[in-house]
Image (cartoon, rainbow, N blue to C red; front, side, top):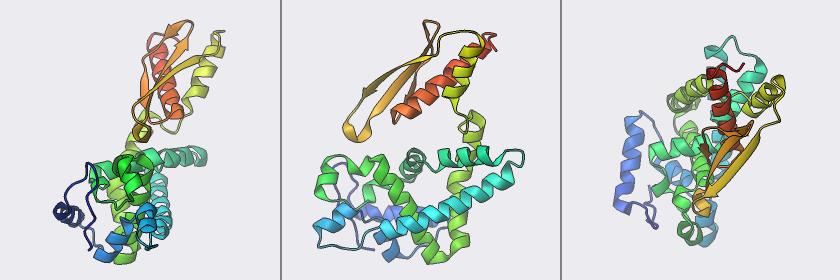
Length: 244
């Protein structure tokens, strides 16, 4: 496998082989050339004469991820409706979740980026990490077959699905809070949202305000996630206080 050049904040090129060793620890078989391709972002390819990028592998990996997560959802939660299963799947295969998986694997420092992306923190940019994770799944499928790729999906994402179900990720908490307010003749909830951090790693903290009371804040990667989290906390606090 060609060793990726280190960018700002990246590990040294000699350390890149540690990532391949990590995959071996996970009992993942992957062709070194396909791994190299999976780690090649289009910005790097553009600056190096139009090299192949990881986008086709990303396309394949997206399908592998959908098969694996759908299979687990269907088998693990026979009591849930199709609509609820779809919402859970959407939460787990979101860009944010894929980015979290990539950070846990330590993918970021090994992604081959153009200079512009490197300078703007691309090695920790959630969208790039998410796309690379899908490309990695595609590379495993081509290297070792669909069963091996699905085993990796189950290893990485089944715990996220369980957590999503436990915390109600498939629930539209803003709607739940709106209905709770209507049931008690309260004015509809308001959301106070404040953003912070650099552009490539923006965070948003939201507080749901009900009956002039600001409830516990929730921090997310975007305003929608932050408001949903704040609504969930408000519902929890209101119901715990005896409001139902």
